Length: 204
Image (tube, rainbow, N blue to C red; front, top):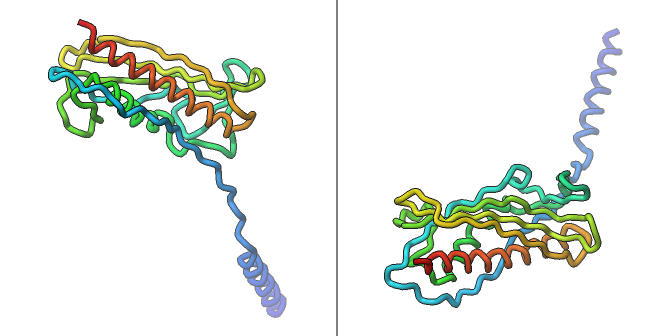
C-alpha cells in the first residue's frame, strides 16, 4: 500500500507541474477611446471688470457615469460595448474641454478649476444627461445632451441655465464610428456653451 501511495502522490505532483507549464491565458485588451475637441484659442480680450469663472467637475446621470460606452437599439434600454470603452469617464474628460471653451470666450478675467484656489465670482456646473450611440436607424447617430448652470458664487443664485441637445451621424456602424460622432457632438456643444457664457456676461 505504501508504494501505491507514493505513485498517487507522484502523479498528483506531475499533474500540477504540467499545469504550471501551460502558457498563461491571454487577456484580450479593450479598445480605449478619448473625448477630444479642438477649441479656438483666439479669444477676445476680457474687460477689466470681467468676473472670474470656476468650472466645477462635470457630473453624469446614472448609466453614463462610467468608462463603458453606451449604445441603444431600443428606446430607453441602455447597452454597453463589451470590448470598447472610454479611457476615462466622459464627465472627467469633458471638464478640461469646458474650461478651454469658457476661456476662449474672452468673457472672463480667468477660468480655473476648483483646485486652483483662485477666487471666482461665477461657477459653471454641468451634467451629462445623455451620451449614447443610437442604432435605431441607418446611419447610427450619437445623441449628446449636456445641461449647464452659471451660478453667482456669493449670492448662491443661478444666473442662467440651459440644456444643449445635439445629434451627430456616425461615419461607420461600429464603436469607432460612435467615437468620431461623439467628438463632433462635443465640439458643437462646446461652441454653444462658449456663446452661452459670453452672452450671460454681457447681460446687464
